[in-house]
Image 1 (spheres, one colour):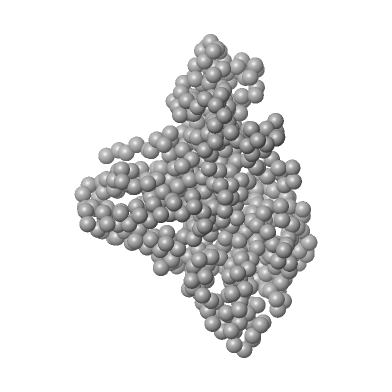
Image 2: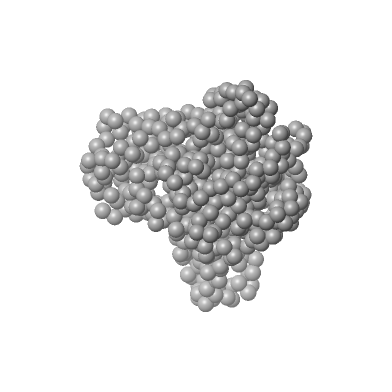
Length: 553
């Protein structure tokens, strides 16, 4: 039986994209799988009794070395901020290509703590900074210094000792451009180096609390239990700066979604499934209840989603135990159709992720298809006719073409770049100034404008002639020809509408990173946790691929 890929007009709506969860395709999970046979080392550890100083970690295989250089800094409590405009952090990090020399370390000591104000070199591949979660950090240090383990309740509630406020790569602030490293086999997937940096930062947080506790009480202190370490990840605060990425990289977005949709399609097409694979899937669903019930947030919006997710997952478990027969033909297709009929979007996408878990042979080949050589698709086929473009728009933007931008609710918001930090921001068009500086992120509005112009012209007009007179629409003409080949390249929603929930855009990208425990602090920024439950570096050579579900219990 052949199953069709899911309809982009449904899947690419922001409410559905904002319900995506991590999966085997997520970058932090594929990073761990790909680097599990690399050698981890702590090459330098020069922290003072209070935990300030320098630490260097490395991953090495066959002469290739990546080193994380960590700088732990002393700052005042009132200098600690999650905001991107901060200028001081508890720790700053640079991922170095190779083994850093003493000269490199001295150069980095001067530049890395400054972050954007500093200047890196082609030898550095990624840059980040992080702040302590003071409540849990101090608690853990105090407990360890007394020779006891910290409160599991607090550990599970917070989930991390530090949270990052940015992770940079690909040429920013002098870092190496991607073209220097894109052909290396070990990092051919998206964001591999950023995931490596965050993973090694996690180990730094454990080493730092152990070190401080030991210096407080050398005779009676203890180290953080490895089982507790695994319950801790790295937090992250993410704002609107991430949102334009998914608009500005249409072919990359398509490849991420297409791989996920292809994996689901192939799983649904399996006529028979082994008992082992059935039990693995059911175990993941059962174990995932712990993930949901330990998902802490004060957001009414997110609490509502969690409530219905938990209710529907329990409903699914009851169905699996008492009604569903996995031994009938095409069980996962039948199960998926039941989900669409009986459960909410959040639950559908949550279970879609788990449907991939037993099927490494399906998922792993797709991981290698999640990058994109975007420049190949930049050129516009100017010899084609306007009738071709009209047909593309009518086929691929059917919902967007129904929007009436004469109505205020469809153009309520606008995106702009803040003067202070050159970061994307969102404002009310009718209550705030600055719409004359609007960024070209209102793709739905511009597609509608393009369509309204095209239908008034002769259909035999060449695209080159149209662009000569309408150069302001070149960006959406390009996008239309991209979506002709890449059906999942476009958000099928209005990114300036009154009902826009911006964190849906953030959550989409973060789900592909592998984030969990989404905690919105407003509709414009949220906190997440990464690598919670992940194997420690000394466990990389032999770990359970389903750790994200099993290790929470």
